[in-house]
Image (cartoon, rainbow, N blue to C red; front, side, top):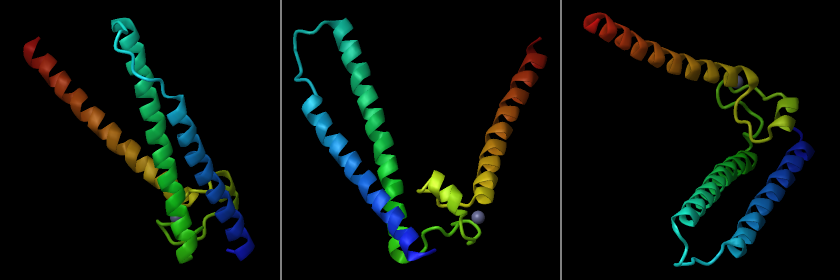
Length: 137
Ligand SMILES: [Zn+2]
């Protein structure tokens, strides 16, 4: 990959990192102090809100890890190389999904494997259920 292209991605990742940290900081100010007089209904909505924030933070943490991984790949010179087959990842794919570590083909293979796995499990439990129905009815 050309060094100017690498630099472009590096700049992008660093900007995204800063954005995540800036957002995280803003949210601390946004947190409301705990009110001990709130009733159960309020408690529930507070809990839901806390859950939402937690999920958002987890998603951001995952994204941050992907960005850090990508920055590490830029540093060691493997950025843009597929972690599955070692071929170069299509630049159009990287532009659409800069943190991609697999080429389209390897990603598709991975998704098919995951799908087959889930599908296989589902069939197994369905078979069990059917046998159970046969034995009882
Ligand atoms: Zn590949």
